[in-house]
Amino acid sequence: MTYNHLTNKIIIYLLNIILIFLTNFVFAEDKKMQKISYFSIDQTEVSIAEFSKFTKTTNYITEAEKRGWGYVYEFGWVKKEGWDWKKPYGIKGEINEPAVHINFDEAQMFCKWKNKRLPTEEEWVYAAYTETREKSVSKFIYKKTYEYPVGNTPIGANCLGDCDFNNYVNYKKLLSRGNGHSKIGYTKKGINGLYDMGANVWEWANIDNNDVKATKGGSWWYGKEQMHLKHQARKDKKMSAVYIGFRCVKNLN
Image (cartoon, rainbow, N blue to C red; front, top):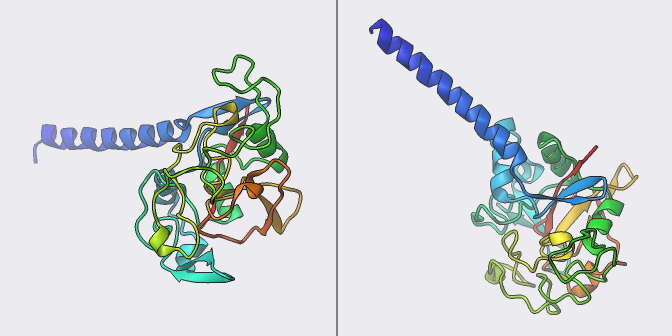
């Protein structure tokens, strides 16, 4: 092997390392976020594609993958073999579907990897229901608090029965109830220009309790009541299921 040939191989190797680093760096900052007061919040739920990059970089294996099954509710909690974030309904999900079957600690781990964190319940509610954009490009009124994350009615969210929504990924044949989630950003754009805050999948939010955490916004399994401003839900932080996902926030200071 000649000296020049060896030098070229070294240069190509180093360029590949730099490319991988830059790709990961850009990815870590590329998700569109919306400024809300002292923090910004992801415009959409975390996707399968995003979570995949996290697991490939960290070699993390979720609890659902380790145990070999995921939860769905069918007249009681049912274990579904092979259901996890890669295969939310037992078959491979598309990369722009929300990442589900992820417990609270795993979601927090992902957010920290992105130099972010999970929202508190108060932050999530404020971002979801109160318009904070002074020069709003939408119909929403500055500082007004709405009943639903999409406005005065639930229309346009991916909930069951009440929302007049059919742009979901159709997993109905694999479910005893509902149709399944939609791809991220496919629901009606809501308060503060955010997508999927109402229904689609529950989203983890932090509260001052070591064992139990909040899930917000309802999901495709429920009607409009669970996505209402006044609704509260709590789950064991170790829980992971087919309709629990998340999004991250980042402090602006």
